[in-house]
Structures are given as C-alpha cells and as structure tokens.
Image (cartoon, rainbow, N blue to C red):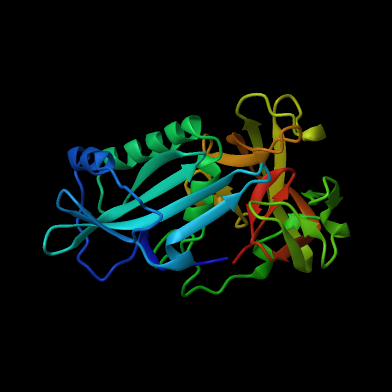
Length: 309
C-alpha cells in the first residue's frame, strides 16, 4: 500500500502542499473541470489557463488497477494551484481505461457546500460513465492518510479489539471459495481491490458489541447466498473501516444512503451498494477476529473491507 500525507475535510481528501490553500467557487469548480489535460502519462507538471497541475513522480501520483477483467485502469493524481502565489485549490484525479478519460475535481476543506455536493454528483456520474471508475477512485481516496480527517488515528491510542469481525463472518478467497473468519490461516490468498495473502489473523476474547449493516446492491447483483430479500447483512465492531464511495470510513461514521462496494459473484465485478439500515448494538459476541493482509483490502460477506491501519 502507498500513503500520501494530505489535508482533508471529513472522509474526502486533497493533497497537502506547502502553498497557501484557498477556497474555490462553484463557477471556478466548473472551469477547472473543463480544462483539458493532454499527455498525462508523460507530464507530471502542466500549466493551463492560469492553473498549475502537479503530481509527484512514481507511485505517489499514479495508481494502477487490474480488477480481474484484463482491463488496466489508471488514476493520475494532480495537485491544482492557481496564480503566481500558487494557491492550492484542490486536486484533480484523471481516470483512464480503454481509451476513455474521466476527470474528477476533489475539493479542499475550504470549499463551500455546493462544491462538495457537486463533487459527490460527479463521483456517481463517473460510475455510470466508465466501469470501475467509482471503486478505483474510492480506493485511491482510502489510501490518502490525513492530518485531520475523521478517520485519522494520529495522536490517538485505540483498542485493537475495536477493529474486528465475528467468527462466523465469511471471507472471500482468491480461488472463488470462502471461509469463516475463525478458519482463516496465515498465507491464505484473499480477494480485494488487489489480491493478497493473509499476514496474520488476530483473535480477541471478551464481550463485544456488533453493529449490523443492511446493504442493498445497486442493480441486479447475484452475490451467492448473501442476498436475503435484496439485502446483505454485515456485522462488525463499530470502528472497523470499509471502502465507501468517498474513501475510508469506519462503521460508526456511516449513514443510511452511503455507498459501499460488493463483488458480484457471477460477473466478478465490483458494484456499488447502498446502506439501507444501520442497527447499533445488534448483538453481543464473546470473540472477534481481525486480519492483517498484504494488500490492505479484503472482502467480508462480499463487501470490500480495509485493514485497520
């Protein structure tokens, strides 16, 4: 996994820079989105119409994905600055696949509500435009560590028992099978945004309250026996992180209507799904389990989860 230090608002993110940060108006938001960026695979520094688009060399500014369908997807992540003072106004993520390009402007924490609302609309529109857009952007956002986001663990000591699943929850394996958490072993190869081996399985004993999410896949998703009355149930302790449309969120940060990602058992694609209900303190269990994985992502009940760190 790769982590980039940023400053963010809530769970959404924009790359931290030494330049002065300023807000952006709704009109300027539309203007920046409309600026064409050419030859992005070659250029890490672009100046257009009074704006500077800058991304670091190598992995820090480039995310590459292969979602088990043979299609290579890439995201080029640029910091956007304006004027001679180089005031930072946000970021632009340029998603490419099959010759198509989709630009997403990511506001900084100073942006007004109307800009953030349009950003969410653009995320959902991009999901309809190119297959794989939403899940790739979500993963990119989840990998940006933050100084002041709601999910930041900086300066906090947390009980490791807070980040766990019950013993009977199913984990998806790379060979298409699944295992209960209690049966997972070191070296098992798991699916996720990237496949990877289990580094360690940690068991905790005690008394643990579980939160239950009821999740409705968008469209027709045949997710094995997990779908009951159109819903998938997922249980975990309150602070375990999942992959959402806007990046990394803990269960206690989720709201009804938020989007997560589920793997369709027939197509193998990641499809979006909406949280239909959240049941706090749904039940109590005496043991819970947590995984450390090579890739930092795995699937529980076919829902994409993240390692706690």
